[in-house]
Amino acid sequence: MADLSPAGPGLRTAQLDGRRLSEALLPLELAPRAQLQLAAISRWNALRGVRVGLVSTALLLMLIGANLATPIYPLLQQRLSLTPLDTTILFTVYVFALVPVLAVVGHWSDHLGRRALILPAVALAAAGDVVFATAGGFWQLAAGRAVQGIAVGLSTGAAGAALGDLLPERPTLAAKLTLACSAGGVAIGPIVGALLSGGSDPLLTPFLLHAVGLLALCVPLAVVHPRMPGRNRPPASPPRITTPAHLRPQRLALPTAGRREFLLAAGAGFVSYGVFGVYLALAPAFSARLLHTSSHLTGAIVAALLLGSSAVAQLLVPPTADRLVIALGMTGLATGLGLVVTAQYTGTPALLFIGSVLGGICQGVAFRSLFTAAVAAMNPERRGSELSSLWIIVYLGSSAPIIAVGALTQRYGLLPAVSGFATLAAVACAGLALAVARSPKRG
Image 1 (cartoon, rainbow, N blue to C red):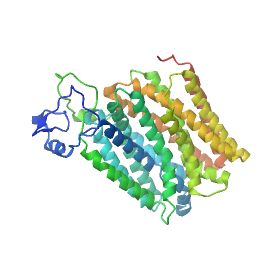
Image 2 (tube, rainbow, N blue to C red):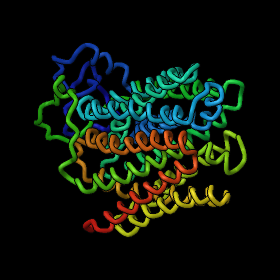
Image 3 (tube, one colour):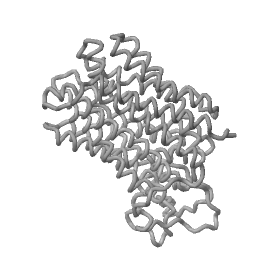
Image 4 (cartoon, one colour):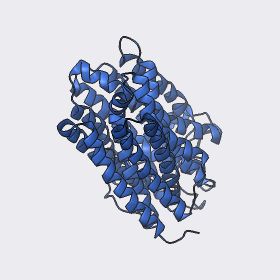
């Protein structure tokens, strides 16, 4: 019902005792009392940079929380007698909760406003932390992961759309922040979890501290003055009215504008997030065998190398329309996977680190370029819905591949399962590289 994006000059804003109505959704005489009361609370007319910071922080913190437990899973396997398949299922429970939420409510922020989804998502993520921190068995762990998935599903499309609204003249920066916070949160989460899990209760400390941080973020999110999403409209246009029909689940459809850019970004995201998911689920065990160590921090660092390198590349390397560079990026991800698998067969730890960094950098350059092109081609008034559709495809890459690898690991062992996955992922990367190289040149 409220937003963090700036109001356009064409949006009509009602006045009440010198205070602006929280949204221009309804004429003043039809506005519900709760909506008028919200205007008295949301009085902080923060600068645009502060609003960008709030959205980015919310997205970053929620992705950190979703990956805090990565280095702790080996310990959970010992304490709760979890199998490798159980661990991979815990990863996919998060995705299976996230994707339906994105599908059902992904378009809501286009009608209700961005903050209407971001604020409750942050509070719900804190609740998920508490459930996971107090878990005493597999099903409670799964419930905590599901709550975290729902929270991220509520906020993913809304946060990306809010950054696009806040930076309409800088779509490249908006896409950079969206991807950097997503990949950065996934990369930082395992390291934070490892650093905070050294005490007697490795679950309680990291998750409760993270929950406190999320709840603290709810305060500025609640008091910042809301703004309407979408493009500027002529002053004569009537206020936008949201009805229950607007909020019904919509059939997912490809965008009419920029469809090729959308498909290339979705395909690259599906493959690379499949790689990320397998890395997060199995890298601690994979590195422990190669490096002969049971250190939680070592496993977390190895898991974060791929994603951290991707996040840094997305922040520092500008997106490119050069088809050859993007194709080489996807090829580099496949090469990095090959080096990681070769490291295990040859017992060469250096190849593990080199392959992880190479794959992350190449994925970051390629995916950010494709993602930026896809977002730039989207309809601003449907940005929340279309971004949600894109992220649904991307996050699906973090589900089925992980379950398959977990099942293969339980039956054939870790190295054969990872080798088979790496081969299939490399073939998919090569196919995407070919598709990018043959795509029409963008201006």
